[in-house]
Picture: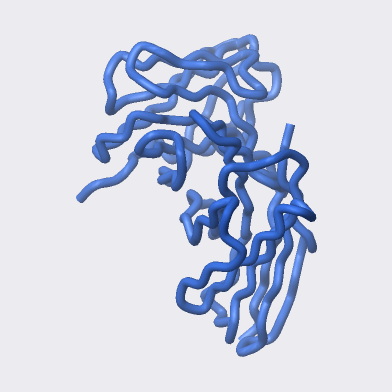
Length: 111
Length: 112
């Protein structure tokens, strides 16, 4: 079963705009990760946020985590055409964790 | 150049055949995983291995088998018992199963 659900399923924005995508999950987690997947390729790790953290930044990426609402958001600022990809959240359950992936948000950035 | 390598990139299987997908990593990672991805969907876990000579079933293990005889290698066999094997298969590894996973570039399997 898939733990995370991303929202929206698809998002289309103009270059330079910000993109926000959300992830909701069902059970307690140890950490939450965001990955990017270009079409037909493997996944690339973007950022990991632990359950005791509320916000984390990496370059143009900002991730928030609200464990009380069991949700996370990924914000990409000043988007570029190269950001066009699918974005997945993945939740880790602690201990030896079995990381579970959501269904993804497909982002299209129009030049 | 460290990383995780999957081969082949494309694979065609005839009905009733077993095929094996290769996954090799030189990252010295203990944990390795196999995922299946269908069009427009997320990743579903097939099998995972925490350590050499040990592996566990994931959510959709039926019709698949794995081995972990070496730390570097985690091959996946898609057997004839898997009735709908056409999909994109992704292998991943992580240092200890606690965090970031590194992915291969995937193998696209098609039944002909």
